[in-house]
Length: 398
Image (cartoon, rainbow, N blue to C red; front, side, top):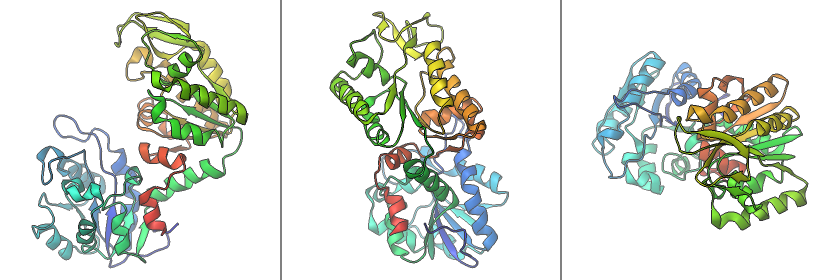
């Protein structure tokens, strides 16, 4: 792994790809600056060396091509400047206008500039080589620290690396992500438990298939568990279910049995008569949900069983909440799991949390700092754990 750790970038113009795709409110104020904060160690290292840093980032999903005011990085630039404690040069002019090109030429050691949203260029998401060449011309070396976009073969995340065959590096965040994921894939202490949630089995097939070759236990939570429950003949009321994946669910359970992997489906559920915090609720066996009711969370008996599994594990991977945690009435299962995983960490277990909803949950509940590793990339983490080659990583390693 080619890290920036042992390289001095004094006097160099570094092209740095980061993930600054952060949430903003209706007034365009950044509401969660975690991704900016997590890029700071790499940026500060480059600046301490005496580099001039040219940052590339995306924001949202612009579709039109060219500048779109609602997707400008300006609010991000403002928050970034506050965190950095020094001016950040920024222009809404795009490449080809001559403005960002001139700014890059004039950039001095110790200065930072942020390019406007890289996805304003349609070529970016197509992996266009011409755009990659234009970007490469701005600097003399390339650092990728955008793990959240590492599974995309885009101009700024992968293609650009070919223009720096001997001067391409992982930033500290990317290096941290890869090191931790490699531990999960190849060096995880046993017993190893994977807790997999989410609304759809179809979105987690890859990780379930990959993990059943690596773990001792798989705990299946969230809405996707009701596809398994129905596949076993349970009555699930109005609970979310992929009827076209019932045979797949049976096949996955059969294969886990054959491999000797223990899998656990919650035995009771908190159900509601509507998708609301003021819904009427009751606790029922998971396979006995009445018509007109929908499962929203794991029940107390399930939480106790999941706690026992977690506390007897030395490695825990958690991807996906237990229920509709954004509604307080149905957040207890997710909160309980977060508590158990944090407790296991205190007792020496290694716990990795990934996936947008799981990460949001542990942050919201104040447990993020108690986990061994919280991934910044939902889709990228899933694809890595599925055994897929991530273009943004391969481009640096080649």
